[in-house]
Length: 181
Image 1 (cartoon, one colour):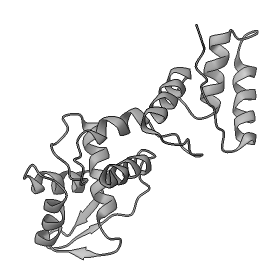
Image 2 (cartoon, rainbow, N blue to C red; image 1 turned 135 degrees about the vertical axis):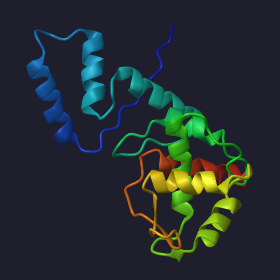
Image 3 (cartoon, one colour; image 1 turned 180 degrees about the vertical axis):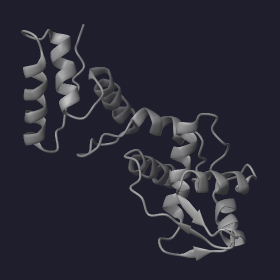
Image 4 (tube, rainbow, N blue to C red; image 1 turned 180 degrees about the horizontal axis):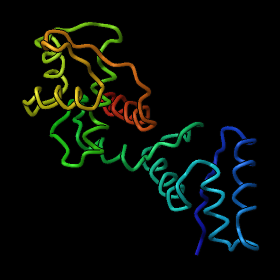
């Protein structure tokens, strides 16, 4: 049976080597083949070898090149992508919280940095980015997730600047590719 090559890209070799050395020093005796695969995957920033393998297979399916830095859970990107149509509009609200949050990050990325909106203006923006007709649900969820802030009286909304999850970049890349096709 032919083996599938699982690529391992390490952004910075020094922290990788330090993490691997520390893991090996805590290990009793010589690690088995599977234990060594897990140690290598963890040193590269994955949860375990299965996470590394799933990430590589999903990247191959989505045609995403591996990027250095924090590793995105590309299977989440693939699942979230199903909730968007060809124009990049959200077609339905995901039932799983982690997918809802990832979809909200797409909306967050479309809100201009530093701009102040009235409730009506932010609702109009959100209305343009989904087709299932519940802009208030998305707006409230984004406030609850600390992606948007609003004044106490609810008159002004603005985007909260935060570091997005690693999955947002590949998801936006896939949405753009979907729109071009």
